[in-house]
Length: 109
Image (cartoon, rainbow, N blue to C red; front, side, top):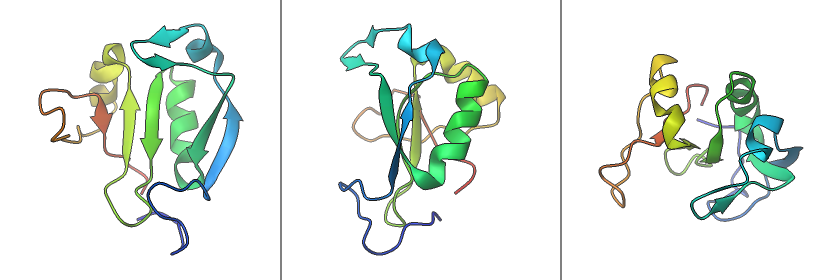
């Protein structure tokens, strides 16, 4: 479980921290519908894990700690799916995209 209190719910951004987008992701520009901006907002309880992945060269496309209400996830670009599996991450099933494997269960929650 994460460190969110009852005032933090899915859909609000009370527990997020704005950080600079890593250089290896800024240079990608856009991936499909997603465009990398100068800064990203990350749930505070996932920030350390996300920064560790960035330090390993992993490009993330989104994340959520789940706010003690739903399972959290870390999204990555398709090219980094094999690396996430090598790092021991488990794919999080997404019923909206049942054949995709680009979402993973955070290890530190």
